[in-house]
Length: 242
Image (cartoon, rainbow, N blue to C red; front, side):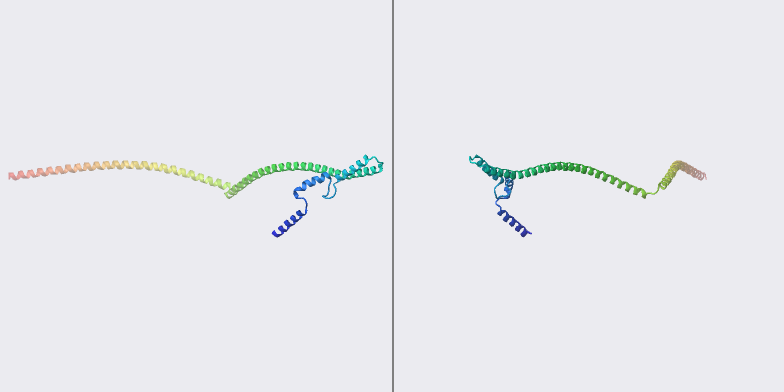
């Protein structure tokens, strides 16, 4: 590929070397040819030929000699040259007019294309908004579908209502049982408090009885001691009498 590129470049250099003018002079040469109606780089330009025909005709007219036939010939040659020169001008004018019309058509087409581009941009923006809205709607549909699937996995409403009724009945029973338990607990508290009060009173009475028994025992012991003392005194007195 590199060798082929070098060959093509070499050919271009050879071709450019064969021309007397470079690419930068093309515009100036084309403009000059259009103005002078010169179709090739060789030969005499048509405008110059027309000038020569006119100068020959004018020079022949200015002569004093009887040269009417020569003047007529030169006049006809001049007219022929004018017609020859005018025909390409008419063609060029037609081409220019066609180019102007084509340019106007291109301008109109460009305006239409720009309008269509602007309209397409507006449509694209609208489609983007519609796409975003469609995405949101699709997301909502997917969420609704997921919720619907979750709902479909749940038991029927009748079963749910029955389950709720059973739970409410169970809750009511538990509340009643709780109330009964609370009442029983209050009763047990009262009974326990009464029991504690009875035990306390019993303990007080036992202590009192123990104290009274102890007092009685002490009194009995005192009496026995006194009686023993009295018995010992009587015995000693009898011994003395004896």
